Image 1: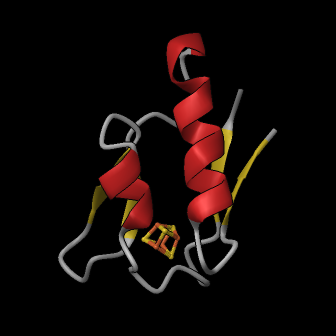
Image 2 (image 1 turned 30 degrees about the vertical axis):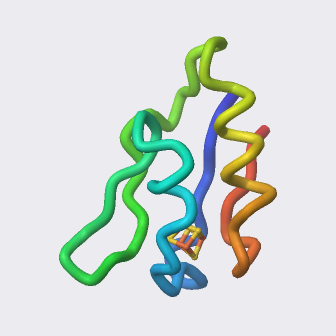
Length: 62
Ligand code: SF4
């Protein structure tokens, strides 16, 4: 599974890195930064939860 973020749409709500700190960090402005673009199998459920929880719909998986 590959995790993708549209940085242009990220407004820094922080839900992704609150829900899945193994997968996301934040920059100095609170915008999301991907830690593991290639998601390990054990974290796929967390990746899907983060995608579903982003209020800006800027996260996706493929
Ligand atoms: S939840 Fe969405 S908008 Fe908020 S920091 Fe994460 S990617 Fe950005």
